[in-house]
Image (cartoon, rainbow, N blue to C red; front, side):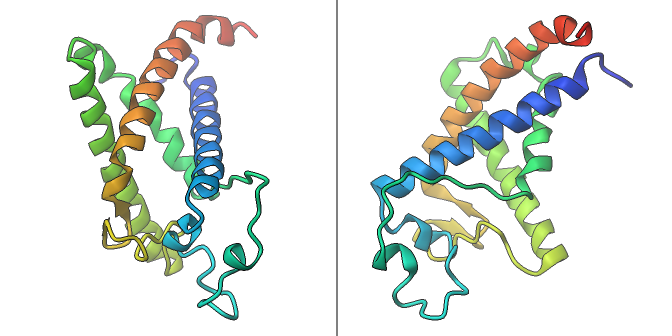
Length: 167
């Protein structure tokens, strides 16, 4: 079934996800210098004991994402039919629901990507709080906030759809 304006909303969801991740990684890396190590971003450097981020600390707040995230962020459209049923729930319950949903998508997506290319782009095995290197338990507050932010964006995007279709 074709939902009018969905192709525009999916583009908005992808942009939202990428912007959130790039901002998050930039800010988190500035606040926690060992953050990149927990992602195994420098796992293939010649000297893993002294990664580049430790030798030359960069204060430019450079964020990053993975191309694999584009289809994952596009999946925000799957919340559209669910939202009318859960908007009456307390915001804290919705936030927990969204965080759990993100973990499911992150785990399954990471597992499938690992099957396809042999490694996980966001390998969390260096973190103390991970499940199979695919999700981080300590990221719960961030996914909670992301989910509630995505909820607001989805509601606005749905409201804007008639205007986007007429562009």
